[in-house]
Image (tube, rainbow, N blue to C red):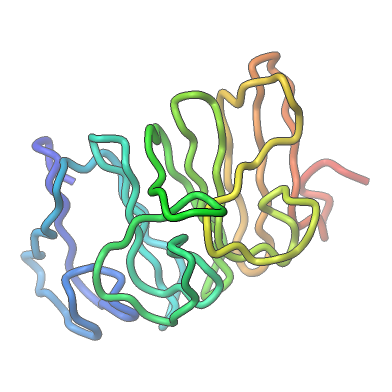
Length: 194
């Protein structure tokens, strides 16, 4: 990402994760500018091998995804394996794109990846793979659209950390009273629950 907010990418483009409209196309060492409607604040590439997904936060506080999405990682309501163009994650129950997003993160490895986006009102949204409950939905159902993550009503989320890989995804959420809650994989007690 340049100071002017332009996103460049180069290298292996499996699943279309670079988002230039093609698959398995190396763009060369000089990289390729990715067309976008707004400047880029942050970009994440997650997964591995042939299951890689791109997640991008723009200066207009919108989010887009590209690439692998079998478990809903793109957040647009679909589960197609590959997507070669950027799409907008939408809220559960509708087709409205996420907005007012101030931070993005992800966790996981290979096809087992999960995406998160925090908005300016302190609401945390998540979508994708959920086999260990890392979306905080009180179940292990994968989500193809963004669901609100909230462990406590009446409190605002001020920070969050998406951790783990190799099928050990977990999530930590900090509220405005400085208390931290966690969910997800806990095989080695990494979320502090006995």
